[in-house]
Amino acid sequence: MAAHDPLFPSENLDNWFPRNGSQDDGFDLAVREVSQRLGVVVGGSLSKGLEVKLDRETVIEDLAVGRYVVVRGRSKRFFCMITDIVLDTTNPAIKSDPPDLSDPFLREIYTGTAAFGTIHVAPMLTIDQDENEPKPVKSIPSHFMPVEIASAEDVNDVFGREDGTHFNVGAPLELEDTQVNLDLKRLVERSVGVFGKSGTGKSYLTRILLAGVIKNDRAVSLIFDMHNDYGWEVVDESGPRAKGLRQLFGSRVAIFTLDEDSSRRRNAKYDHVVTLGYSDIQPEDLAMLKTTMDLSDSMIDAAYELQKLWGKHWIGQLIDVAPEVMEDLKHELAASFSSVLALKRRVQRFERFGFLRPEALDDSAKKIIEYIEQHKSVVLEFGRYGNALEAYILVANYLTRRIHEMYVERMEKALGDKSLEPPQLLITIEEAHKFLDPLIARQTIFGTIAREMRKYNVTLLIVDQRPSGIDEEVMSQIGTRVTALLDNERDINAVLMGVSGAGGLREVLARLDTKQQAIIMGHAVPMPVVVKTRSYDSSFYESLNPALSANGSGAAPAPDRATERDSRRIR
Image 1: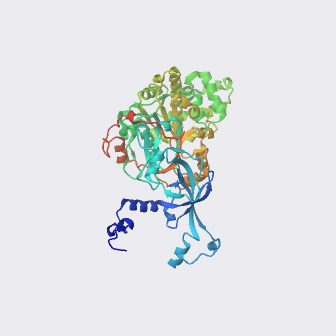
Image 2: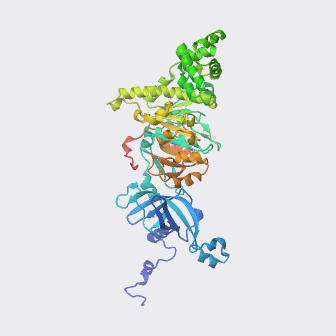
Image 3: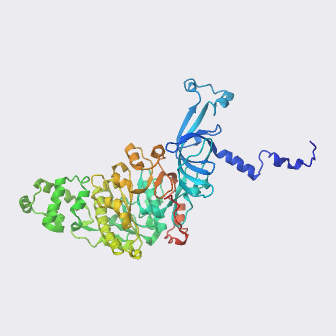
């Protein structure tokens, strides 16, 4: 061939045969795409998932369950999650008589041919090439379709971008340059559950969710803060102090306290001291404490009889009752006298709770409602009483029962006029299985809220390490489940109850890291997603309000509703 052949000019050879290390964008893109490929689809079904044979260049050790992959079909992208990783061979004899792979030549021959890796992936969503909108999976790709690691663009196509309705809670595994955005509007429409074994960071997860809800004004929160984790700053396990919601949002969050001394010692700027009168406690409240205070059915029956006999001040009278009056009760009550004596000993424990008095200083439930109607979230700190489970259950049950009555009354008055409706309320409770045990959930106010209160603009955010202890009917009403590591089989089954593709997700859930990882399923996300949650640090504070810094203070601005858009969640 002539050096200056006009058909093949020498100066154009680089265009025909790119040199190694060429900076041509198209060539670099091709290399990049090849490096992201994992393998091809070789089998599977819609119900059991797809089987993918890995390319010989794919390093199995770099893969992990919970990671996202994309199958490039002929006209669709199939968004899938890795649920299992398998080593396989073409010849079963290799397992019993492994070859000597010290010879690099033999290693190359066996690897990827006689011995290879496969992964099982669960299809979650499909995206048509023409529409670019995620839809439910109703089909599967054909044989030998290429499988690639999901890119940031793929993730953004599914979860959308952060705006007035969507809030960034973290990044998918191995995709730290993108983010998972929860649909906050759909999050608060139904009850939410945050689950995980002790030490997995449930409180920080909850605080991130609450910060998103308050920042975007999606709901007003009432938080029963058992261990002073949410209102004011708390010492992180790693050392530094983490800001509370009051410090992040200023006057948009109010702190109520049961323990004024504790709040003062921590320099927590509280707005109101909560007190309850003995006359506020009903036998229904004692029924909630049946397990915690070791109350028998006959003791509960005696409580109802004493209330009928003495009126609303029955607890105060029972605590201070004279011996001769006790003798007269033998003939006036149908309940056994021994049950009355046992009940007296139990309720005398209330005397050590400083917030319980013969008469309350004011109506704390009404005060909370006033703040809620001003669109201010309320954190009720328990101080030293947080270690007394009976105090936590008693106060949370009483206040929630009163607030429930007020909300129902206001919603009924507002029928036909949405402008008169009270704001969406999200009630946060810890140790939720104590309130929602199958034996009492149908009678408790929290069970009622979980089942029915959505229509009254009230939902729950329950935080618990024992989801198996929660009534199944209540669990079925939880719209979004944010779950950190669980290792108890019953708890895993409870969290996955009613979730499509639970078999594959079980392996993912059991292999989460102990810190800063969670799987999110349900109403607020278009598909189950494993996230590395955001760090609760100065960068998080500044994302809520640029004026906030590691040592600064201030309140986050009100959301810009003009940026809100309809949910992309599959309905």
